[in-house]
Length: 112
Image (cartoon, rainbow, N blue to C red; front, side, top):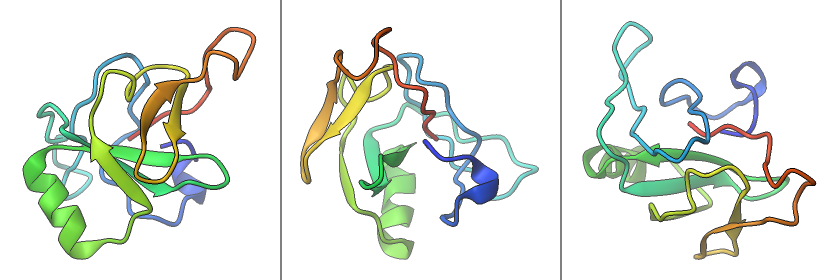
């Protein structure tokens, strides 16, 4: 997620996940429960503008999201999704690395 939790109006499905090349499902039913931790299969964008706020989900938790929440876009997790410099590439798109976004080729956002 790219926006701090305390100012973000959408439901939190777990702690912020660093963009470190791994994508795991961070869904948890409450704050006392450990995150799911299964490999993520879906990348969901809650909003595409301004910027992207997104989360990663496994198949069973994606079914829950589809049944209960509204999101802007989703796609299967790809190699670029959990990497620093990720950019959501168009509606119904995929993630790509935007190496021109910053001087050090990294964005400062976190994903959930």
